[in-house]
Length: 230
Length: 124
Image 1 (cartoon, rainbow over the protein chains, first blue to last red):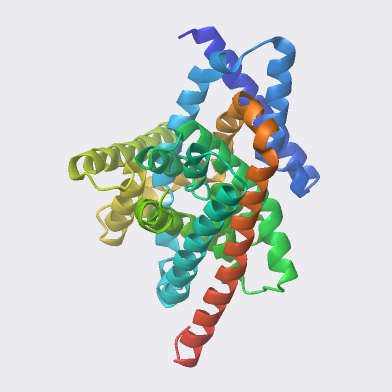
Image 2: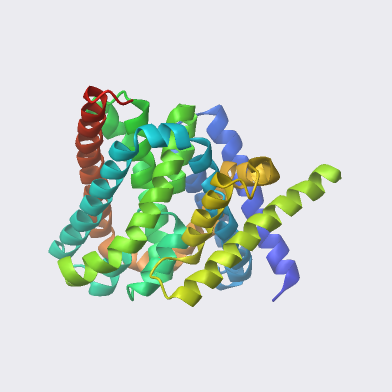
């Protein structure tokens, strides 16, 4: 491990993040999404300075490792909202279970119909939940975990545009329903957008991403082997 | 300084629960990832009062506030798959867009229906 290179690439990552957050706060626009903007900036910096993806690997592993404790931290919004959660347990669970199942089945059907490889289709299955969980499930399903992690990020970017667009189109005003949709379709990236919309939306999105991840990790192996026969 | 130390201890506690989750996942051979078990363990510890929320609140809120940051290094990995996206980008995007769209529409009907059902039963 080249310590200097790790420090340098980490600083570039942090710099791009801080800058993108500033831009996003100043000009709130879905196309100036923090993850999207930071990624574009870092790729541009690497491109011009000749840093390769393999040279970024160490910094990436360290930062990605921190997603583990960050996932555990999701118990906090779950605990804080136990009252709203308890009162609406049936709609919350029902919506997440049916929505997540529909999401997996639709994605696999469309991907197979469009002639994508089996490995790619399998790697798409866990795409809607937070990275550390999606990656673990991808391994269990014999998908490609790195490919899955990229799909998760792309899904998050798409969800932050598409989910609010559809919710507005369907004239959904209930903050509970809105928050659940954000968290179920676009995990942490959706939760960040939901928090910007309001506290109830944000906390429900956090709850949804947690429950969707738990449900997906249990349901995906079953769906893949018995329903979708991948 | 003391604030910083507190902060480090809180994140270390979250990390320890994460490791406990990993260890239990390996031991039990459940098809559930360690981080999910860690999250459930922490939730139960909070509900039973074994862990007080203020012990970990600041560290947890910090990690969640900057959740987007941890996704960036993975997104940079897109560079490696540029060939795949050039080849099947449209198919991939369409699969993801359709899955997401169907999920939002279905969820809205199911959650909305269940909210109304529970409300008429005198709940909510």
